[in-house]
Length: 198
Image (cartoon, rainbow, N blue to C red; front, top):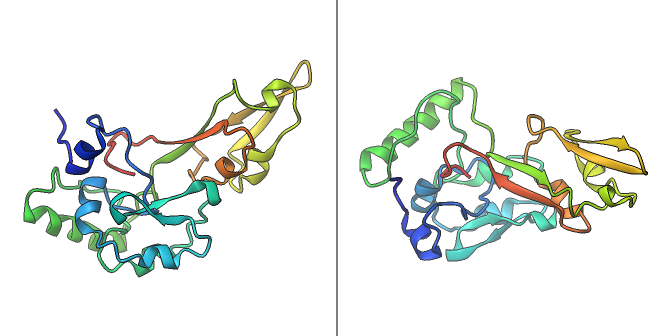
């Protein structure tokens, strides 16, 4: 059985499905709550005001305000190491109860300077076709028009319906499509195999 963090227990989230969306490049959740000092520097650094104080004072994303452009301003001001580019290769420590794990995490970030990096997060958009205006013969392309990465295209169907098609490989999970959807048909999900990665 996977380790349950204190935060998961207090939220009643024993499966780890309700992890809040942390700022980009947040380290895995079980380490994030240990490393983050709740200093608010990342909140102040976010020009678009997408990072807010969440439960317990920890920073989290509010995609209702818009989409993240991955400017790295929050990453650059995080002195505590809670936001950190991690190398694409290399394993993360298994749990946070050992002081060696904090050292291993710091070492893996140091190695990242010369390697490829993990993506800023493992968030992907999804579209509920049952609620989508476009699927109900109403002209709406809000999500596609807001997607700078062109991950959302529309396939024309008979009857004046344009079906949104989301390319999850291209989707960066920036959240721009969520904030513009007038009927909240767009959702964001953590899709990492390791649910601890936000």
